[in-house]
Image 1: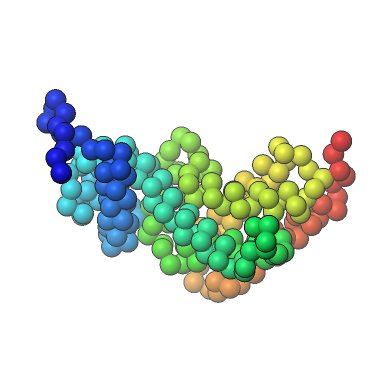
Image 2: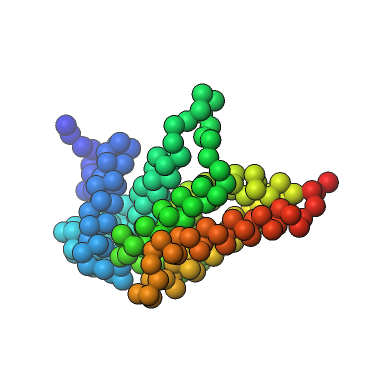
Length: 216
């Protein structure tokens, strides 16, 4: 197979080849972060995996771009973790699962992520803090939001779309802050963290549903 060359001498890859290259570099970067730590720069990661700095910049654009790619990979894993534990789907494609169970599974998946992939989590969150887009604009948050939003709508029917959006992001912020605190403590068991967050979110939504009259 031949690859066309650009006027600057760089090979021109097809969309499929670029996607394959990006996936390969993402996997190698994940391994580099796991081994070398979550505070590495893009230059250090490039050296770690044996590619030139321009290759990573051409592929991801920046450290934040690489963090987005890593977040997407972890988001896919998190989503699979949650859906696999819903149980078998009903004939219409839905799942017979309670609000409390969905919340518990999402919280469990995020806690497991921090526990099992601490360096990747550090890399992603540090890149988020240094980017002007803020903490809510990355692939991992998008998947969590996609899973939580229907739960908030079901559990708090009296709220409107804007309130549901704020509540969904607020729950993620609560979980994120709790996980940040938990990482610095060796005194709290993982299951205890999951239980506290699940109870807090579930009871909070129940209180909102009881206290907010239907809109309209």
